[in-house]
Length: 464
Ligand SMILES: [Mn+2]
Image (cartoon, rainbow, N blue to C red):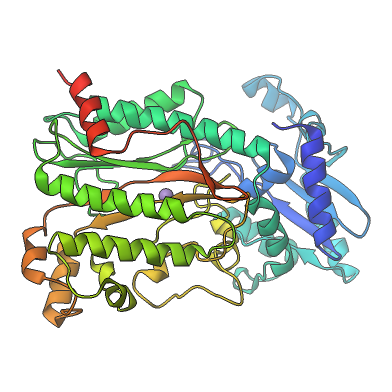
């Protein structure tokens, strides 16, 4: 945990940004796998971690703005619990570590909320994503789940605060990135023809676990990198395959890393792979060079897309004017997703609070219709203190190629004959994490190799 002062200060800032009423925070529960006492891995809610730091299932908290007090609700262990689980730090002790003096039994939460509602006070709450919390909120408020109305005022205040990372948060994120770097180096030295994809997934998870880290999301370790979120891991790697590893560690305090590297299963890239890889890497470098406060991430995304198109024109897959190609979204045949997203306590930071608040503004809302832009999670102007990912890619998706070709879509910009030579090429993505600074950006972590030369040399050193 950070210091008690940290959590007190964060709560004070939040309290100052919401006018009145009570702020209700629900922690997560241990969700059952197949029966109640056999739960999935417990992960505390990130907003709860941010303001209270307490990693305990089935607790809640209230910041009462009108009465200027903060209470954590939860149950201390009974003697039966202690028999089974041993003596543990009490909830009272844990709460004190985040500077909360008052704890009450969990059952008193409903009375507190009912009293506030009865006296006509506003009860602010966040959009619930766990089913148990949807049910709990509906019960506490005496309404149907479908009628829940999360507080926009509370969401906006939290997004504003959590978007700007404190120095100690950056330290945490860099720890996560450092462990992620090691995971990627391990994958690069371990992967060889004949192995199964899951062997790499297992190896990197083992490495992270030994460093007291979890995965910040289920790793994508695949020879079919053309599938954006591919979690199938039973393929056998063979000579000539490209291996895409999108994986990141999460520190014990909950901070994420999110990195992607693509490398050949053989000792070297083929010429075709190298050419495509360098288009992606150049695009990455252009995007990185544009990161600074005051520029809209959507504009960086579109500029990166233009460079991707230029590279694909050089290779003969595209043609025409790059600017016009991007205006017509022709690049989305190859780059269907967004250039990056916010990162912090969540790998997609605060996605539970709503992309319209985290990645966009009311004045410039997300384009939710256009293929490509509808998958861009971050569009708004960057600010010093943001942590973002940059992750351009090329993804060859046979079904999409066939569909576009049947419609002769963007035929002015796409050489379908050439594209079909690459239809089974797979995919390439390169991803790093950056802090936006006052005058630009800083790469988080010590830097993970990414040029063709560095990757080939690294693999040559380690492959027998
Ligand atoms: Mn990412």
